[in-house]
Length: 575
Image 1 (cartoon, one colour):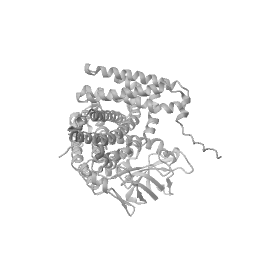
Image 2 (image 1 turned 45 degrees about the vertical axis):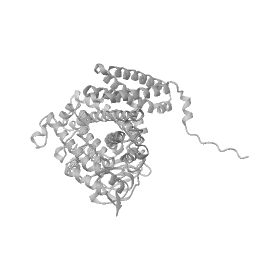
Image 3 (image 1 turned 120 degrees about the vertical axis):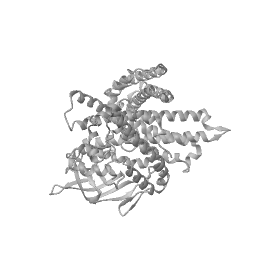
């Protein structure tokens, strides 16, 4: 029997991070539920034990069921019959196992049937599920759409929908359209209010993950004559009421078990969530931040799977009389894969902890007024969550693609064949740097935290922490990298040209990311020495990348941007 939680000691190291004590005590309101629910924890140790046991269940289901079904699901995939999605046989088994184990609605309050988990152990479960089958994570992981209902819907809607999610009903977020992908302010699906005050939806949505779900969150245009984001509102559509059919399932490169649907709405009854006109401005932004954290977890899970597949093959494959892992060229690839994996995971959980604290404070604020100290702390963690979310989504997805690429490289010609798992991992990974906002859009979201100093301030906070003598040289390298980064930021900000700033944004964000991940690994190593090799490899890698970007910025003139812009070649003049 395989267990994808207990066979990965790094997960427990992150689960036991010192900040978890604060998160748990805030989440549990000093354990006020202990007298109301038999399964509510009595204290911090009890809560951590509960997370540990549930994650062990997740690991067992992933190792024995979901991973075992992944190959068949990839081949069979879902299909459409009479406007409805029929899941692959393995997907049905996976969902059934998760429902029976009570793994739906994990972060929802107990009064609705949830486990009241903080986001961090929930994201850890998503990491584990993604290692087993990234496509299934798209179905199971969409339960986090319930967070948006919980945050913004009225009490009647909470009582109506959240218990259904906790019981195992599936969700989707219906945002994109044929002419509105990343540009969501162009959404045109029409929401019309009838004379009795009820709402109906008409139009088409495209690229909707798990589009035939039980409960949909739908972005639609509610304001007649509007053309921008201020005319959009958020709605809940319940499949039980009818009015939406699946026109087709997209034939995708990867994550083939996850149905990506084109939906047709015809007078589909729906309910308004929160206030009109805030659909994109407020509610989708919250929804997308949660989704981006989920994709970061998916990316880390895929990186984990790729590293393990590569390592096992390198140990078993012999060439020239010895296992290929003994060749320096192969060993280097593996060590870099492991370093990128560990760096991705530490960034993921740093981000999830920041999100945890600010979201818990938002929830507490619904019950009572926050103290001035709590308001200050909530604001600080909200800013860090806002800064780290695009960094986590952007960098973990890029590393995930690199690791699955290198996994195939280690397999050689065999890796190009469908006989090996790495071929599926490579296809599954490609979407991670595209959906829920491409890497380029994550740079757009992250760059303001470069220019306003959020990243530099956090780096300085990490720099102030003491480290053991064995890691002082690594810390000195990170300090030198920070100086290069700061100089590069000042050089870019010193040029009064927005095009120049936009052009350099990716480089500055990557520099910040490498330094932050380096410091996070350094902190992990102080708690667990098993990270030391990854720390040293990753900081060496980051040192080269930061130096490269610093050199490019220092020796680049704004007028040279024109060399990078597309120009239509003139046809040769006719003789």
